[in-house]
Image 1 (cartoon, rainbow, N blue to C red):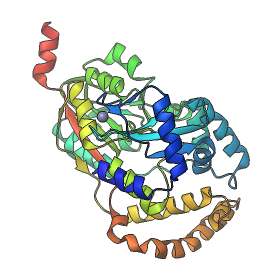
Image 2 (image 1 turned 120 degrees about the horizontal axis):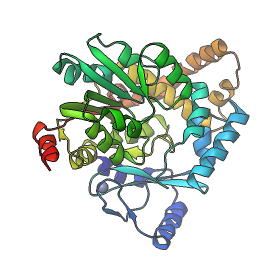
Image 3 (image 1 turned 135 degrees about the horizontal axis):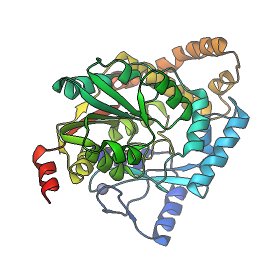
Length: 363
Ligand SMILES: [Zn+2]
């Protein structure tokens, strides 16, 4: 499916013929690019190529905050060690990935988080509760990339809650509220190997270049029979979103476009037994999200009404103007009908086989 979308896109995409030729020349110049999941060679042309300027405008249009936009440009150029990043899709396992294959660092996220939205309950929290939490009486649970801890705070008191969180500020808040915060998975392994009953990775793996090591560490932290809940944006849905909204899923925030095939391939490789993928259900919330992304795409272009609206400093006025603009935008997007309600993510639950761990112990 991802491959079909890729072919359709490469036929109709905004990448001009000149750019295609350039990409082709670049491909023949450099050494082969291999898929980070299955190792297969990627000889096809890239799906997209983004410049530093395009990426920075996506995360913060210069009309919204010129200074922040410049800081982002500087930071992204440092990460890419150059002026652009290309997105490839593996013909063998469907995995899509950025090249250079590097995710955002602490500096990048600290700039992004200055404009962070309010956290809310999400569909994948319900998946974790039904598919993992409720299968046990209680025990130790770890949420990796816990943010403000919305998920952990909602659990019953029979669960001992732990978090891994990158932001220092959020770490302090979590600890203040009685959530035990671990500095990282490597640190956690020194004191908590084989101890967790459930680990959750809600929309984390799309940001991480060293995803295999992260999954391996989760496996080692879980007890035999322990459950790992992984949720990620769906690679196919990312491509659909780009077509419908014009808003690209921009690196270095998301550098992985996962498909159920590629994700279960890596999870099995590190020792998990994988259940069937669960897809995010269609909802009206997704229509609103699509609308929002369309306006972000408009604002990133620089000379549009949306870009002018982002100049408005007062949050309430800006919101009112955006809502007003939402009406004609919605009418233009109407032709996509049902696609607007579709979910954009999926979950896979992995279980550490009891036998597997016993065997490892007996060695
Ligand atoms: Zn692959």
